[in-house]
Amino acid sequence: MRNAIEFELCGTYALFTDPLTKIGGEKLSYHVPTYQALKGIVESIYWKPTLIMYIDAVRIMKPIRMESKGIRPLEYGGGNTLANYTYLRDVRYQVRAYFEFNEHRPELADDRNEHKHHNILKRSLRAGGRRDIFLGARECQGYVEPCVFGEGEGAYDEAGEQHLGTMVHGFNYPDETGRDALEIRLWRPVMDNGVIAFIRPEACELVRTIGPMKAKVFGLNEMERVDTLHAQLEEEVKGG
Image (cartoon, rainbow, N blue to C red; front, side, top):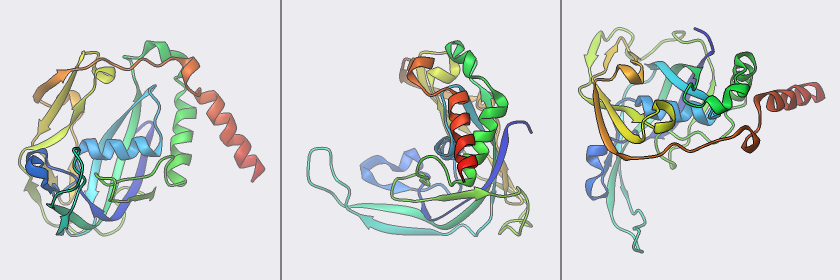
């Protein structure tokens, strides 16, 4: 697959929140990571508005375990309240992802250098990401490193097909769709011997509009060009 990376993702806790459980401050994690959560992690490894990151598949490497905690989150009006959060505990995944150029941003056409973007993406992965990695929530620190997708023993390699019901797939943002609206996508994933193969966002049939939204405008004079960033990294490598 062109422009692809494969990496291992791990952490002590994860909270891939089911939106239906947010009422009243309670949070319950899905049993597996969502497409949107994994996309956010890939964008923490390397992101530019020139690109759209796609998640191809995730492999569940450790048994799915849950742990509940009493939390006292801050309230917007001041003070705090008591809530119950249910996390995933001791997680490890293999992820395969890739990028394509964002055709809805023609103003960034001069920043479309596939080779250089891919090199920066791979180097950023080896460095553990350009930004902090979070597993669904800020309190859940994550770590990434390159791997070969499919290597090693997974907890569900012989488990067969497991239907996971209706889940959130992700959000459609106007800068990636060309529509002036924020939309949410739902789908019905199947885990096959520990592997969830994600459909592309445009293949989701269950799409609901949340509300109007305008795309943020970027210009090449407002961001670091890929040529400049790639040259900086080359100098860093030469400098040892």
